[in-house]
Amino acid sequence: MDGQLDRRAELSEFLRTRRARLKPEDVGLPSFGRYRRVPGLRREELAQLAGVSVAYYTRLEQGNGRNVSAEVLDAIARALRLSDAEQAHLTHLARPKQQRRRATGSRAQQPVRVALHQLLESIDTVPAYVSGRRSEILAWNRMAAALFGDWGRLPAEERNWARLVFLNPDYRELFVDWDQKAYDMVSFLRMDAGRHPDDPRLSALVGELSVKSEEFRRLWATHDVKEKSHGVKRMRHPLVGELTLSFETFRLVDDDEQAFVTYHAEPGSPSAEALRLLASWGTDAAAARPAAAPPQP
Image (cartoon, rainbow, N blue to C red; front, side, top):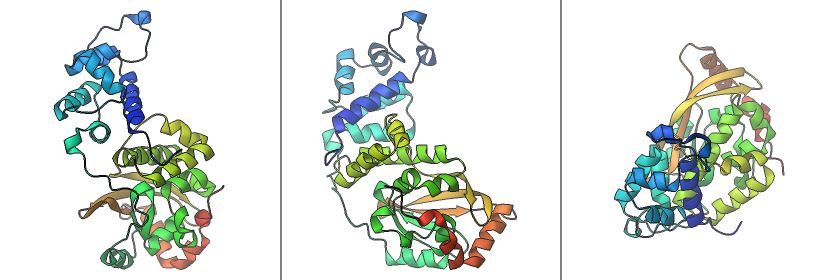
């Protein structure tokens, strides 16, 4: 894969896959049964729903998003029944030229503010870390090391959630619902790629994972996107067994490419007791975690 993702190809495939997942009956159109030759909606049907000409929509789906208005994008998003994340992704790929932000390029360093490091160190009962662009892990506290493995034992380029999830077999064991975790990671990366298609490091990461992981390659082809927000993860820790933890994601106001992520357990639950044990073991628990082993080549 070369130094950047092809924005036109990304736009074309995204629209095509969103259209293919809609059935005519989903939007109140006749299906004509077995006489349909394409999965999902036809371009003509989607154009009708969005209130644009077939030729106009066809050009857009072919990757030509130049001069498309925000109003048309909104109409197409409604017709495709896009989620908020999907609509944002569509806008990233095809927004009018005057709305585009100047490309930020590929930042090799994503510095974490000293105050955030201090905040992480002050939180001694909740796993917490700071993530950045391309799913990179930038900073973490002692509890995160005890839960996920001591990322400090890894080379900086290996401190990446996508690499760990798809290339490190220990993380398949750590996440009980690994398939969901894998889907989420690819969806986050897709969202990132829409924002920064000119980032060569992101393109290189996608290329590497596509070559080394069939699961990643399959999920990447779906063009699904989502934003990380909050939810629940079940984990299988080698020292304390299974935990059910809720996570929260806080985007930094002064740098929306960085997020502060925390994991916590329901008070009084077995998972809360397991976290308490990890906290009491401290660095011993982190040292015992095999998940920090380098990913498989």
